[in-house]
Length: 169
Image (cartoon, rainbow, N blue to C red; front, top):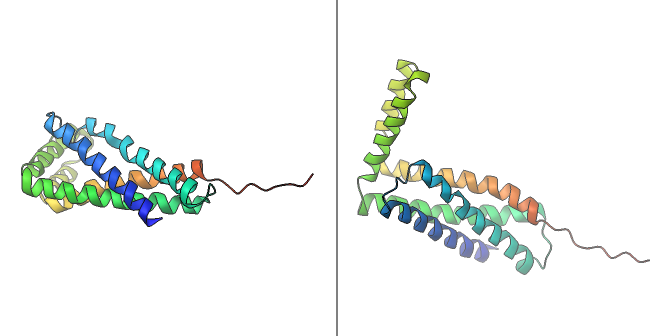
């Protein structure tokens, strides 16, 4: 099970990194709405991992719990790889990513300031100022983990298969 999770988790992490790099080098914001298009990438690899695990490691039968296990582990490996890359990219290659994030977050707050009191707006601005590259990388990775867990709940239900019982007639 670990070998399957590492394999598909690594492929998923690399694919997500490639998606983000495509956005970055195409001039799109990796924090913008277009980055939501990449949500399908880990879902595809989760589906592949769960199906492979069921068909090859478990001989065609899989309980919901087994599907959850492989999906969760695959998500963990994918998110770890992505988070590490995101942190290294932001500290080694483009140190302005953190400032881009802060400016976009502040702009979003300014656009929604009618919904917040002045005190809440000030607190939110203070929290944006406290963001570091490591906390940003952790936050981005954690968001991907949440998506992976939700997708795993659904994918495990879709791919579960009980053993066939043979009835004597």
